[in-house]
Each structure stands twice: as C-alpha cells, then as structure tokens.
Image 1 (cartoon, one colour):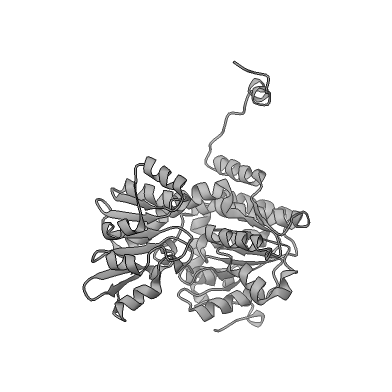
Image 2 (spheres, rainbow, N blue to C red):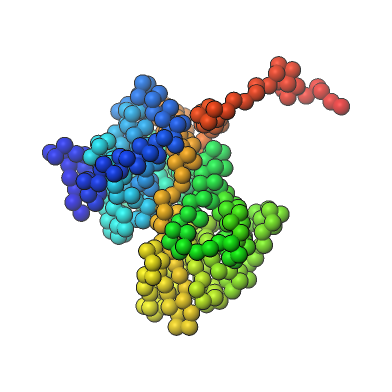
Length: 428
C-alpha cells in the first residue's frame, strides 16, 4: 500500500491513481446535477458551518454520490476521511478526485483484498473520528472490537443500510453499543425510495451489464421481500419476468402473494428458478443442497450488503476448483454435470457490476446522512447508547426539499381541516 501525505500537497490516502482525478470530477459533477437536495444543504452548511471542528470517519461505497456527500460534510466544517464499505464498490476515478481535487483523505481501491480492506478501515480509525458514518457497521464494529480505547472519543454515528442496522441493534441489545447511532436506513425518504426504487433499478442494471440476458419470460427467484426485495420484484416483473419470492416472515410473504408473485420455499424455488437474487441481510440463504438442485446455467446474484447470503465456500467446494471467468463479473462454477454462474463474486451486484443507485435517489439518502450528522453534532449529549430512527422533522424536510427541487407544491390544510383532524368531538 502506498500512502501519500501532506508534503506532496495531498491528504493521506491510498487510491489507485490520482491521475484519474479529472474523469472523477466530471462524473461527480454529473451526479451533482441529479442531487438538488444535497446541493441546497451544502450551500447552507457552507454558510452556517454546523460541523466545524469535528472529525468524521466514513466507511461508505466510494461512488460519485458519496463524493457529493463528503463535499457537503466538508463544507459544513468537518475534517472528513473515507474508506470503502465493500471491496468491489469503489470507483477508482472518484477516489482520485476526492484526494486530488477536493482534499479529502480517501482509502479505497476497487477489488482490494481483505487485508487491504481492513488496513483502510484502520486508516480511517487512525484519524480518531468523533462521528462515524457507516454502510454495514464495519467501522463501528472495528472500533468496538479492536480499538475500545477510542470508543469514548466518538460522540455518535450514523448507519446507511439494513445490514448495518441489524448489527447495531444486536450490539445495543447486548449492551455492547458504546455511543448512539442514527439509523438513516429507517428514514421513510431513505428506505421507501432508495431501497425500493434505487436498489430495484440498479440491481437489474447490474445483472444486465454482467450477464446480458433477456428478463422477459425468465423465472426469477428473489429471496427477501423487504423494501429491497419489493423493488427488485417490481422491476423484474415490469420487464416480463416470472417472479417467485422466498420469505421467512409470514406478513411479507402474504404481501408478496397479494402483489401477484408466487411464494415458495427455498427448496421449491431452487429447481424452478433460472435467476436467483438475494436481498435478505442474512446468511447462507442458498446453500449446498440448493446449488445441487439448481438447473444447468442458473445465474446467482446478491443485492444484500455482504456476500454471506450465498454459501460461497460450499459452491467453491462443489466445483472442486473448476471455476473460470466467462464474462467480466461472471464466474462459472463447473459441477461436472452442470454449470452455475455467479455475478460480481457474490458481492452486491448493483455496485459490483454497475454504478449503484441513480443519483436522484441517493440525493435523499445522503441528505438524511448530512442532516443526521448535523443533528447528532448538536444533540449527542441528550442521546443514549442505542439505535435511533431519523427524527421526523429531518425526514419531512428532505421530502419537502425534494418536492421543491422537482417543482411540485402541495396544498396546505385549510383552518377548518386542521381543526377537524385535531379534534375528537366530530362524529357522524
């Protein structure tokens, strides 16, 4: 790892090539056009400096949209350092631009191995962050497990994704969480739009870029019917696929059924499906017995945060080393009688094989991140060591700004209507 620091006029960093900065800037600026809410917040932050003097350590996907969030935090007065939250999600030109053009310490290389990934996490931890910003809880986990002496320096944190919220709530339930964290993922303007529309579209995008298959008429199995699964199912169905849902939650399974999808067990779905997509936030959804039952040519992709949703160790063992890359981001596992295909190494396919969510959706998610950072900076002393949802006022402000940016206005309630909904005296 080569780390360049202040003597060359650049912040500490580890990126592939700072010479890629110009292309990164062009793409960051293109995304910014689709992020009017974050742009408005950045303008206010630059004037008010609500994060002045604070150190923010972020472990997020290093994409064009994330770059605009980092610029917003920096405009608010924060000293920001960033590492990747997934080895395949980094856009190397974006990392270069963050370092060379915006002066933000960035530690990320696309395709980095596990040792490099954790070296980068530790590089961010070395800055002694006072606010953490996670996508998957790896930075928070590292601080609690390997650097407990630093935990007391952290005022609060934010968490971007479902998997991270699950981990944080487990920490809180065990009494292990040592500082408050706001679950940005739980904001309505995040999970209703980012998870459903953003992941729905970008997962399909990643699958099509990697495999170049026709979805119309194809049997698609989606594991999980949370907001991500709903979004993927909707987009797959809209493109003509026959969709089946796997769920362990009876309410979500019933909803999937009433939305017009088949509901199956994993065992029933394995021989039926042609394309399998995981979106559960859980581990080993598809396992050895399911791989054995899948048909020749089946394709598997993961849209969850970690690659643990597919039992990759079993898949490799069953192939006995007969694995080859048949297309970019497509690995073929030869079982001796049939071949199974894995996209983006089982990592999140929308970023591993494509560019992730459209910027217009991330505009709302990262607006929630920026405003939540401002909130915890001002209110951390009032918060306990637990997981909080985004305050309703922030959620509503993000929605209001988004509508305003789209040129949409809403009718206010009349005085009569406001009095009616506030009173219990009106009856039939």
